[in-house]
Amino acid sequence: MQKDVTLKAIGDLLDRKLDEKLDERFGVEFDERFDKKLKSGVESIMTTLRKHSAMLEELLVEKRKREENKQIRDYRVENLEGWAGKVGKKLEIKFEV
Image (cartoon, rainbow, N blue to C red; front, side):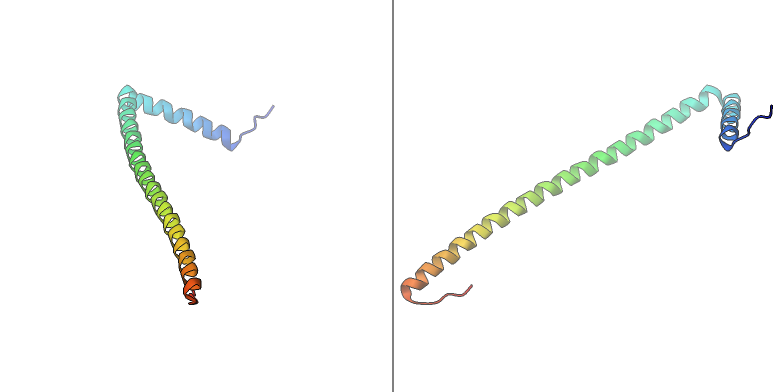
């Protein structure tokens, strides 16, 4: 019976051999250094993510404030237009907006 050689089988074999060689060469020291670098990298990414999240929150708050101000301004303009129209009718003046 002939064994089928697949790319996956070759890849798995190479991964095992590489892991064995790394363990022989560097052992626990390599793992500890790698873990420290990995933790440091993850902490750095998390710090950046927190900063970006805070910035996005500030932008959203500012956007909400602007939308509220726009709604208030639009409401006031509508009231002024209505008031100007009523005054114009009483004084027989046509206001165009």
